[in-house]
Amino acid sequence: MLLIRCPVCEMDRPELEFRYGGEAHIARPLDPSKVSDEEWADFLYFRTNPKGLHVERWRHTAGCGRFFNAVRHTVTDRFVTTYKSGEPRPDLEALARKLESAR
Image 1 (cartoon, one colour):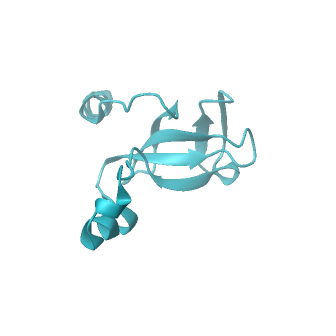
Image 2 (spheres, rainbow, N blue to C red):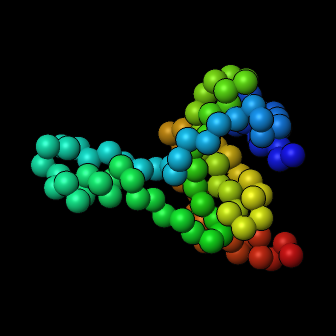
């Protein structure tokens, strides 16, 4: 079972307490009425699917109920770090180098 650290509760909890909320840091168009159908479909349905580090939104449903962001490695399923919503996105290249040097 995976343990996920909730940055709000500051506790490592089992993955069953959490729900995936999609890719993090996706900005909604400022004026949706001026966006083409193709651009709107891209916003709604298409996300990156990287092999490696990926930034995601999660919700601690069985705990504080708050949303937060996490950097997860999509190959190993390892959660590299978590941080509160509204905090800046970590430098993924720096995190990848740090993981590589820890091997």
